[in-house]
Amino acid sequence: MTDNVRLTVAQAVVRFLANQYSERDGVSQKLFAGCFGIFGHGNVAGIGQALLQAEVQALDGVADAPDLPYILVRNEQGAVHAASAYAKTKNRLQTWVVTSSIGPGATNMITGAALATTNRLPVLLLPSDIFATRFPDPVLQQLEDPRSLDISVNDAFKPVSRYWDRINRPEQLIPSLLAAMRVLTDPAETGAVTVCLPQDVQAEAYDFPTRLFDKRIWHVARPAPDAAALARAVAAIKASTRPLVVAGGGVIYSGASDALRAFADATGIPVADTQAGKGAINFDHRMAVGGVGSTGGAAANTLARDADLVIGIGTRYSDFTTASHTIFANPDVAFVNVNVGSFDAAKHAAEMVVADALVTLEALTAALAGWSTDPSYQARAGELDDEWQKVIDTCIAPHDQELPAQTEVFGALNELMDDYDVVINAAGSMPGDLQALWRARTPEQYHLEYAYSCMGYEIPAAMGVKLAVGDDHEVVAIVGDGTYQMLPMEIATMAQEGIKVILVLLQNHGFASIGALSESRGSQRFGTRYKVRSTSGRLDGDDVPFDLAANAASWGADVLRCHGMAEFRENYAKAAASDRTTVLYIETDLYGPNPPGTAWWDVPVSQVSELGSTQKAYAEYVAAKAAQRHYL
Image 1 (tube, rainbow, N blue to C red):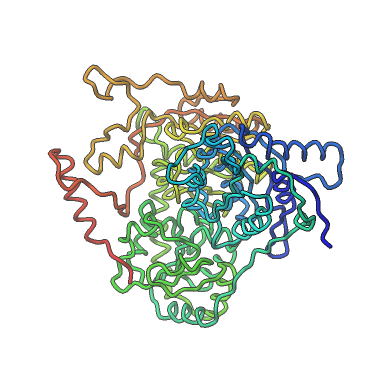
Image 2 (cartoon, one colour):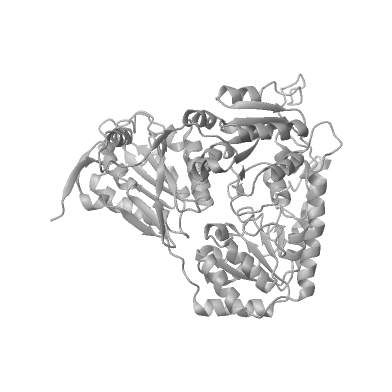
């Protein structure tokens, strides 16, 4: 007969989560490092009580006390970003739980959930929900839907979650939690997992089977390639003369960087990388050719245009990677896609190899023994990369202007940071500059969130990454003034927890990326600068008189104002030596210069307009779009 233990649903959730582990290649670790959250009336007496009880039991030396540390955050969206960043840094083998109250606390997490699912990063969300009994219906903060009393705002999580459930009875918790763990540890189907907990059910007691709380190890498999699929991929590679590898984030998550380098050395196939895959091969490897696509460099994009075979490894082929279906321009181009997910492996009518990147690369290297590309092709790839490295040197060198370009800041950071320090960014013009210019030396160094490109990600992500890497490595988040204003408040959480990161805050009084895009599409940078409204009625007056450096200090960070690049370098050394979160504040030129564009991005232009700038942009758009195609 199975033994039972009487717990509330919330207590059962905490105890269960504390005993879940992941394992890959014989190495196991706790699946959940802890729980981020904010308490409200929906969860303070449920999950909040359960976490308190676990903490008290641990302090009292209770042997089986659940180990699930809690960190109070300032914004629920930021908490999900921190959990996603932690999971990304841990190659998706560990993550955090995030709990919120009902209503606005829950919906604050939806953007974070979308980011996690878009990036294929595991996070567990526990939003509180309306009463299952419906006695106090409508409860405070409940959004009523006259079509059904069974709908709450938490239903909005469904399209941005890989798994979603609502626990209306205690016994439902058992199969739901097990199903949630399956998704969180699935390398192909992972993302945000949302388990909604009605506030009355959280506090309800039930006799749970004790076996539910045994240590459970979820084994993360490395699916091997089907023999026939591998043979077709080998045949396609041997039949090619100008193959190109596109390395995505899946290479890094699989821990396949050494295997990728060995494959490139053995076959002489050039390797380009995506935002998520940068660093999968070190920038100075003889076959590395840098970023590919809309924000890539000339070396990779030149090879991409000529490639007769594209070997995608762990990439989902975003529109930036394909330059909106224009960069792979060879009329006879074919694709071989290696991916753990068949959804991504099937893109562009590819030869599909649905398998783990590490296992497949090792198998391909063995099967292609004795074969390599022509030495002249390898030499051409090297020449193109050498030429692009000179462009990088020019972009990061000092410019003859009053304020430094942000590219100068990136060049300085690339020089100052160690191989295993981590640079973080997500949105604006910076990801484009960084993909083109950053010289990644390790898979760990470059942390860009560009699948969802979410403004506000960088600061909470820095907290999550620092929790993952510890005190041996610096974590540097590059934050634009636009992103800073979205989510600065987790600086206070870092101060609260003694978490040290370096935040590089670039102030240019506007949206540099969207401003440049607006100008290039004929919209004259409309609404993209931080200006007060003038007597003309337009936003074209003086700069908005805010002081972001002072604001950062008010959250608890040390702030060092940098007047030029020499002082920036000096202050970076001070920040690195400090044990406190430090903000390096520097004003940069809104207008760049930025790296030269070498590919296109499809942003439609108004077909009719009375503005000459828009008419000109539309003509350019039509000409560029002519190169767009489906890959069949």
